Image (cartoon, rainbow, N blue to C red; front, side):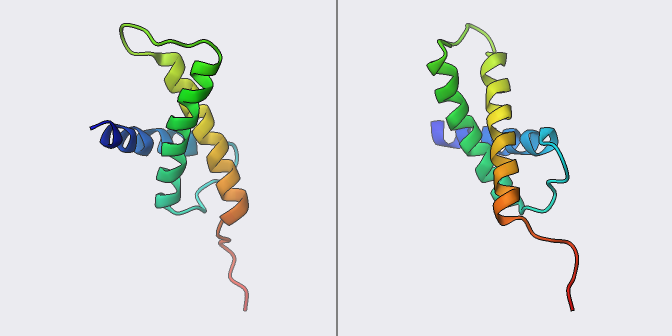
Amino acid sequence: MEIIGVIVAGVIIGLLGKWVAPGDKDNIPIWLTILCGVGGVIIGWFVYTAFGGNGSDGIDWIRWIVAIACAAVLVVIASSVTGRTRARTR
């Protein structure tokens, strides 16, 4: 059940990361955005725990903010490496 939660969170975090990322990042496909979101959730959790985060009783907003920041960085990297150009060359 956790894997489904990570995928659902990855979709949401990936889209938020794409929205937060600087510049025009609409040139990567949606599947890559979701993959960046899942990576952001996983990497964000490791970063959060590495700096002493241990969760809270309610919603742990700091962990989700770190996940969004990690997803935004992954979206920027993915866009730089594999981004499609919109201009047509003849």
